[in-house]
Length: 146
Image (cartoon, rainbow, N blue to C red; front, side, top):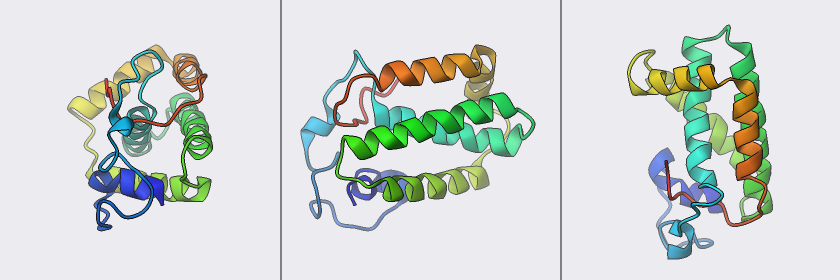
């Protein structure tokens, strides 16, 4: 259940910090800077938000939806391979987050602006940036986020 503890503030999980495996709340190494390769959990959260905005506000944007789906699939595999969190736990948390984000998403403002940036960059750039970020095995971290 590593990811559920790690993402407690994101998902509103009620598990007490300190139970289970080390996580961002209990172990400072999960906050270490990872400037060279990127913070995988940060990218994961952003991609989930962008996927939700795309599904709600841009249902015909199939190329970006597919690229975000591919990126999330690869990020899920990376997290599972480099943490104690199972693939099933990651995918369940992702589904929960996307559904929550779709309920809250508005098709204007900062989220929409970020989605438009992804759209301009294109599906190929999303896939290339994800592949570069995931090229070096390491613990998935939250920071530095953007």
